[in-house]
Length: 490
Image 1 (cartoon, one colour):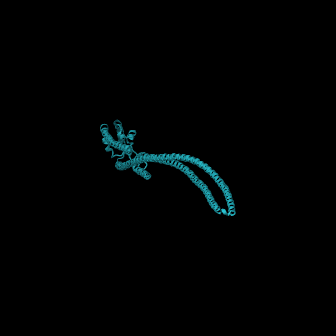
Image 2: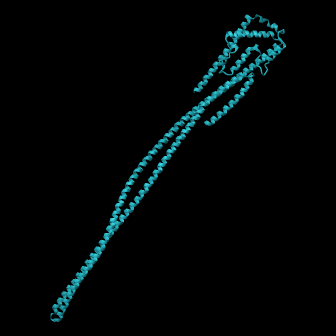
Image 3: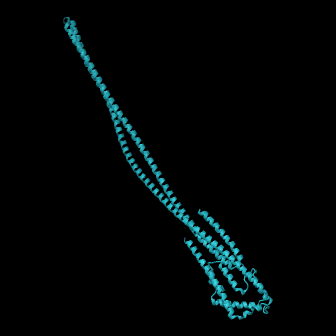
């Protein structure tokens, strides 16, 4: 918007300068003509007779001077001005004014620095017009009347040339205005593009900052989660270490108990062997003793029976008594046999009871041994599982640490990439913002070049044609540059 206001203000100032220039030129020319007429009437009444002198040749002018005058007033000479000699000084002023009119920016500076004779102050104008009229009068007095028609024709041709030059200047001015308008449109479009690029840059920077902030927040949250997991894993690790120590102590305790049970089992086995041997010995001794006792008793009874039988045989008279005694002895014998069988049964029962007790102790010892072995196997499995869990936890911690390092590296790389892209985009926008200044510099340079070029040329039309070619070349370069910029911006 600031550039648009500047261009509109410059256009308004140029229009005002142009109107003031035209009005001042008209007023100056009117004053010059009126002053010239007044001077002509009041101071030079002798000029009324100049028409008579046109029919007579001047005795003071020579053929060489005529040739020189004819040569210097030829408008078709390539190395001379397109105006006649000093008798038409106002034409030089008009040409100078036309040359200066190609640039509206430098018009007032040119008028101030190099004012033409027709627009000086009133006193200077009157004096110069008087001097010029005197010079014209002298030249008219010395001029051949036969050359008046040729001079008039040349002046007419010069006026036509000046009119054509004026039309060409107006066309060139219209083209320059068109170029200026095109430049304004280009500058406005460039300003709009710059505004769009600025907005896109701001949105891109905002999106980049939001993305970076979200990524940073995400990374921070992930880092907090990972730290929480690490703390939980550290606590689990400490818990596993404590459980491992407890299991190790329990394993040692169970191993001590197992060794104690093994020693107890060996003691029980030895006691069983001793008991078995003792039972065997006891059984053997008691049985032998009882058998001996019973045998002795039986032998005694048999001896008594034999004695009684002898007595019975010897004393047949006492057969009845002996029969009763024999029956009593047989009954005692049956009682003895029955007691011996009971003793044997008792010994067998006691033996079976001891054997059952030993087997129960053995089975209980085996059962406890199996339970201890199962507990030991379970403790070993739990210990192995805790070791594997600890190793797995350590590997997971290392993987999480590596992942965290990779994420930090990726975050730093993405942040550097975003900063680099923002810097490149700022450089591109700065270059794009500098382009309107370059366009204005190119436009000003073209105007100054046109002014300098026309001031140094004698043939204005040819100079304008050459400048037109140069301007077309510059415009083609500008169009190619604009195309490249539009492609780069898209």
